[in-house]
Length: 132
Length: 132
DNA sequence: CGGTATCCTCCGAGATACTG
DNA sequence: CAGTATCTCGGAGGATACCG
Image (tube, rainbow over the protein chains, first blue to last red):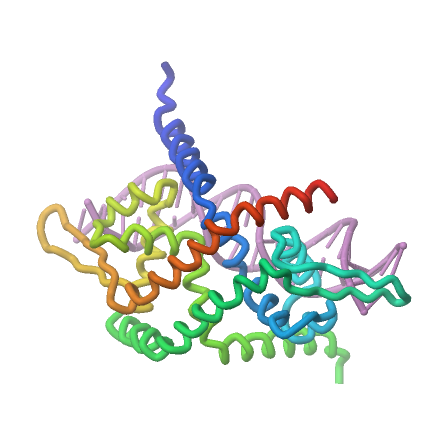
């Protein structure tokens, strides 16, 4: 028996963690929702379909790569639909699915909480930074 | 005038983005909430105070560094309280503040949505992957 | 117009070792 | 026990160029 106990324990913990996360659907969805850009992209679609370029314009600062990646992930999860109109130049519209729409009220609730409590949070931050 | 227009545009976009994010309190809070470990740590505290080591045990796979970092961030945001009992060895308990508690129902709602719709999401993923 | 393909950088997660 | 200090390494994400 070589003394691989440390490495084995590490491996064991990783497996435990993976098992835990795999068993928890919330985490798998949070992975998508917690992404830096996901919220902003979803927000642009709440009031109707938007073209690729429109989204890029509204969500200023996002790179080509990340916008595409975010849209693909959301499409894959069935939260939005990608509709291609064959013409020159090509036109692509993104729309929330009903599944996507069902998520909006909850995100709004989260946003409401944020707006309602932002003062308290910022005060807490200031107090913490001052005490530090 | 050197031709720095490209670099300037880049800079401009970053500033635009930063201004946008800075103006949006939801994003500043989402930064905290969307963290990989935040949800799990908050979850361990919903049913009462927990010690540092207890949290580390429940949230298996988290490194020392990330646990401390997560706890600090949440403490800074006023979502939980860190209470040190001077004894040897030291004892540190973490408790949700009332602000932290007020967030739980919303997170539960999100979790509820995830559990309710996970089948549909996973089906969408399978369909997308198959079509691809 | 709405993307890919490619390279490249940087920073943040994790491992490890040490301390009050 | 509950952390800090330090290094290092991979991969997320940005810039750039090109394509149908």
